[in-house]
Amino acid sequence: MVSASNTKHLGHVDCPGGGQVWVDGNILYIGHMRPPSGTTLVDISDPRNPRKIATVDVPPGWHSHKVRAQNGLMVINHERFGSEGPAEFGGGLAIYDTTRPEKPTLISKWMTGGKGVHRYDFDGRYAYISPTADGYVGNIVMILDLADPANPTEVGRWWIPGQWIGGGEDYPWENYVPPRCHHPLRMGDRLYVSYWHHGLFILDISDLSRPRAIAHMNSSPAFPHPTHTCLPIPQPLKGRKVMVVADEDVAKLRPHAPAFSWVYDITDETNPLPISTFQVPGLDPDGAPQPPMTGCHQPSERFSGSVIPFAWFAQGLRLVDIADPFAPKEVGHFLPDAPAGAERASSNDVTIDDRGIIYLIDRVRGVDIIETSVF
Image (cartoon, rainbow, N blue to C red; front, side, top):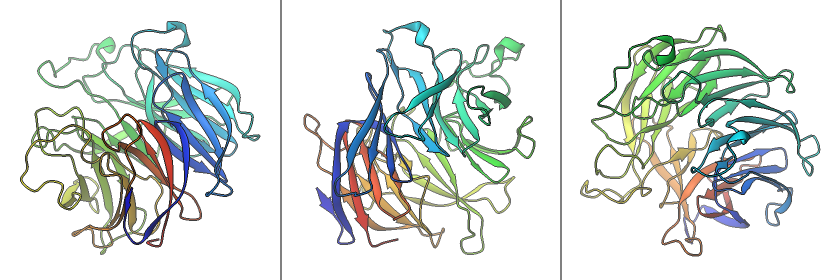
């Protein structure tokens, strides 16, 4: 492993690789990539000695690679993963009681049509999800109310006009990538929504039952990697309202240099303006195409001040300071060893806890626990 002087390796969780890590209290929640491994709960009271306390498995043909937890509830996605396995298991969002985290108990499951739920946000009551739904092409935006977790209710949905072919809408993308909501994130009465090769949208959700688009921006196909995450920054920077946007280094429209991250000025939220970009120093010296999963993937949805931890696929953890949003800079890094059987690291997701300790999951295997003096 390779680290900067301001990062220190504290511990490791030996577990199957995954798509997401999340911390609530002293519990680390790990969403795994491949069945039968679904979700693992780890006691991190002592981050140097993490202790697995529970697992939730899934059947073949499905995965639950995303997880969020708050207020004694854990929500995990069920999404098709391959063509085999029991169809009746079904895609959707599963809701668990984790008031006793060593014994997660299923409360209910919100079923969707098609492949199921990909990524989502959860604020303790509402889940902002990206499901497939009957009659629609690709994933859409849906808002669920989990006030009664035994009986989730849909309160609102939104899609790009043209997705609802079951409702008679004309489909205009026969010669382009189908639209796909990837990831909604809420801040205040706005949803910041990545829509893969159809760019990003800002939705007004002051009325949850009627989400309304107030902005759209698309960097594809000029930059052929898909829009993965739109992360709004709660505090102004240099007097500007800012959003960090991560493109994912997969599913490119054509061979291209590694994906990177953008910084947008959304002071006028109806007109998002890209004001800077960040790429790992030295990664893209000549703009030549490189293998997928070399570049950017996902920023931590939790962060401290102006420093954003990123999972940068083969480049591991990158700590990016956006105090000056016009000139983001790297202020720390940690590159884990490649898991056994893999040629390089594949850092897929990252989060921090209330102590500022960082949790970095590899797509193939393992979670590294990292301390930093940057925060």
